[in-house]
Image 1: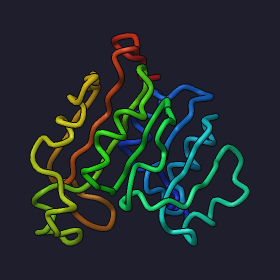
Image 2: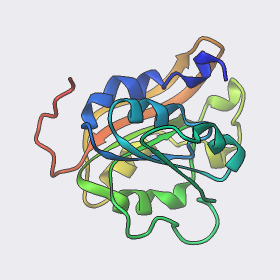
Image 3: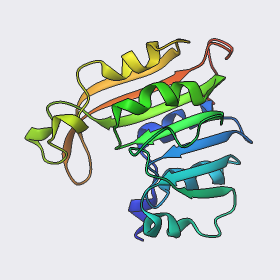
Image 4: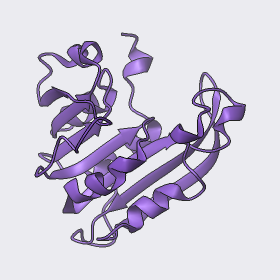
Length: 184
């Protein structure tokens, strides 16, 4: 896999300091695991989930990463009863998971989320509204009880190395976290 495809999202890298060494991190829809690798290299214990077993196989033998082939969109939340110190989701949206994700986050946990938003259809895929956040929608995720404290939020047009996209980005921490959080 080319090095650029393994690089973490700049948003995730920017707020990675919120996730302490030794934290249990859920990498949601991990694909080939760029964020799983990144957090494991920082000393986290990562659970990388995706429905694509072939993509997850790129993480075979990677220290600090446990992979699970799970279809997050079929049936009940497959991680019921598990808690995570941090949850990372990038370029993935399935709204029925919002409540289970919040329930799986530790009281002092960190939520790092970045995905496409309405308006992205002008610039390419995804263009289906089912996969595009509405204005301020990630803020509504942070307000689900128990509410998270928003460290940073952005939405709008971004220009990357290969294309433009409309995104929303959220970094938030649980009420059990000291305020203000240290950003490293």
